[in-house]
Length: 197
Image 1 (cartoon, rainbow, N blue to C red):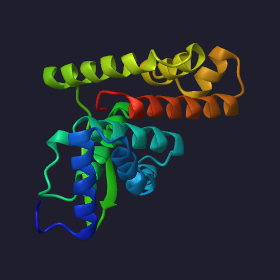
Image 2 (cartoon, rainbow, N blue to C red; image 1 turned 90 degrees about the horizontal axis):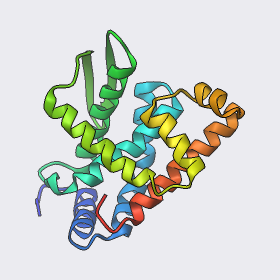
Image 3 (cartoon, one colour; image 1 turned 90 degrees about the vertical axis):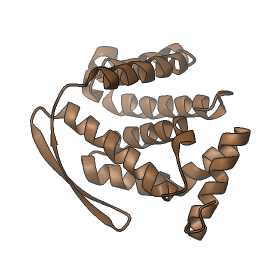
């Protein structure tokens, strides 16, 4: 273990070892518990939209847990997690916007200013994106048909909340509530999955 780690860093490092070596689901849940709120507020600050922030928070944990074996204790887990989250958020914002835009945010004590110019994915990025989509489709297929449809419309077809409400002839509030439940189901499937997420 890296001796330069803080007490919090050592706690995270031990949880990561439990998650990796024993597939301990409580370790994953503990890591999420420690950082979910601060990560959500960082995403909210970057996007200005609570639904996007919620989606991006869950995505960031999914990516971090899937690549947990790449984490090294050279850096604090929180720094690594927030880097994944901000990069993912920048990609999301790039896709959402057609031009270039600036994002100002601070992670821990570091102040970051990023100028983003949109560009298409290179072949490697496209391959990784396709793999991630395939993995998520496998998980989504385990949901009940109604929730599966909602997730597919929101994340695979990229419908807005309004478009989903119109398509399914449901009130907007109902769509948002059901999508929230769908994401919770999805997270629980991932969390309880025998394979590491």
